[in-house]
Amino acid sequence: MKKLFKILGGFLAGISILIVMTCSWYVIKFYPRHADDLEFGNPNFSQKILIATQGSTYKNEVVQRLAEKLRAREVYIKVTDVSNLDSVDPDSWAEIIILNTSIADRMNTRVSHFLDMVGPIENILVITTSGGGDFVPPNLEVDGITTASRLNETEKMATRIFQMI
Image (cartoon, rainbow, N blue to C red; front, side):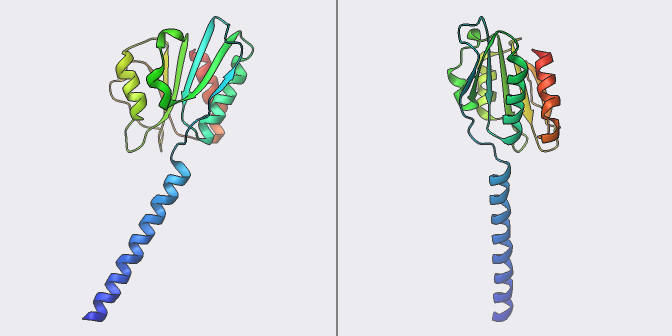
C-alpha cells in the first residue's frame, strides 16, 4: 500500500510540475509587456494622436506600420503604455487608439477603467486582441475591433485603423 501511495504521489508531483511549466511558458510567450514611450512628428502640429498599447510583437508592428502611414500627414503621434491612461486628458487628442489584450475574457483593467471614466467619445478606437480574435467587450461605447495577434496580418490591421481615423 505504501508503494502505491509513493507512485501516486510521484505521479501527482510530475503532473503538478508539468502544469506549472506550461503556465510559465504561456505567461512568458503570450502575456503582454510594458510598451516603451515613443513620439513621431512635431508636437506643435494641430492634429495629435495618442496610441496607448501593450508591448507585444504584434502590437509593436501594428504601431510601427500605422506610424509609417501617418507620417505623410502633419500629425504628432505619441505612443505610451496603457498603464498611463489614467493620466490622459481625452480632450488633448484628436484621436486615441488603444491596443490591449483580453485575458480570460476580460479587457485590460486600465483600459476598461479609462473607458468608464471618459464615457462614450467619438475619437477613441479600441483594438482588443484575444486568442481566437472573438472577444466581445461588454458595453463598449466607442469604436472597437477585436482580432487575433497574427503577425501576417499587421499591415491589414494598420490599414484598417488608418482608414477608421
